[in-house]
Length: 66
Image 1: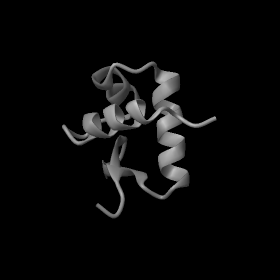
Image 2 (image 1 turned 60 degrees about the vertical axis):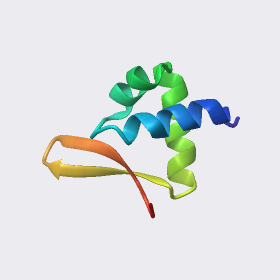
Image 3 (image 1 turned 30 degrees about the vertical axis):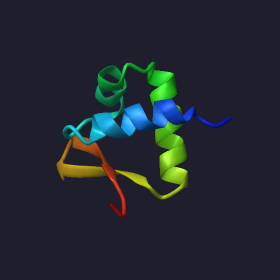
């Protein structure tokens, strides 16, 4: 199943506002956690999203190749 383009746009816009994990990005984008996970999974599969770790235990989503 493919995430709707609107979900993708809202999710990307959310992660561009700050260092967010999937749950925080979902809330900021107005998506369910499941919808955000779907966007995340597609982004990782396309090698466009990744998880970064600033310090141990503090992970956030980043765009790759931007």
